[in-house]
Length: 328
Image (tube, rainbow, N blue to C red; front, top):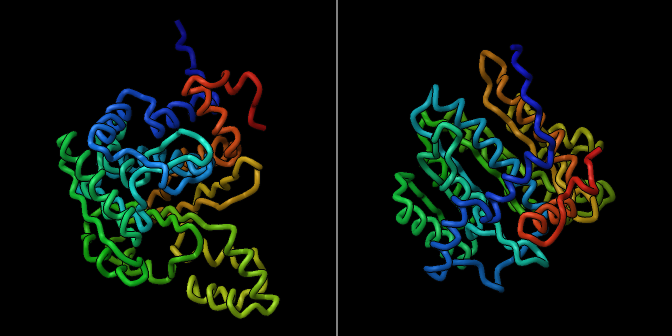
């Protein structure tokens, strides 16, 4: 009898379990939620909220965790997640009751398909309240789940504490550097100090659409916008062509640059781009093909409204999303 070719999953059937995991709707993360609630560390009404499109960013991150750690386990002993804007560990979804794992908490509890997890989490957060919550949430979950992960949290401004982060990374480490500012609060050039610590650090950069708006204002003579651009990345101040500016930004971290994904909100308006920069290898990083496919067929094709519809279905508030929507 001939073996039947395995049917490829539809985008909905691929994104749904990831969203279930992120929003505490699967068995593993439900346990995390209960631990946090029982210790009065669940989200509160005064937490800052973000649009549902944020979950596309976190889904992209989780998907890459699995790809990256499955490859890294064959070559490295230590796997480090570096979160430059770590937040509080939880994300409140705007105008809903939904709550998601934040990036650092996601990295702490994550296990790849073979059971590989991060050896170390390095988190940076400037806000005192968020830092306190992050510290308590991560260390509570580490204790309750008996995790061996080393947690190093640093309070302060990323631009002033970049050396503190770099000093936590060893030459033989494999790392994922997640750069997720709300705007342009970071000096991108300084990140080279982190990348110089190991040749095996991949970068996921959240590139805000606001940078291009600032570029336009600066070109029209706005000195405040020009100064902000120079702080973000000095070479941008002399660029006239937005497309060239995009290339400069993306090449800041070296090549190859892959799996660029546009994140769009509930109104289908672009909010930012996620850019993946992977370490150079003799084989040309073939593992990135899966990430490119995920970015093209899921992250970029979906938007905040569709995510919200899927969340409603997951949590018992709506019908099956592909009954009325098919991504183009």
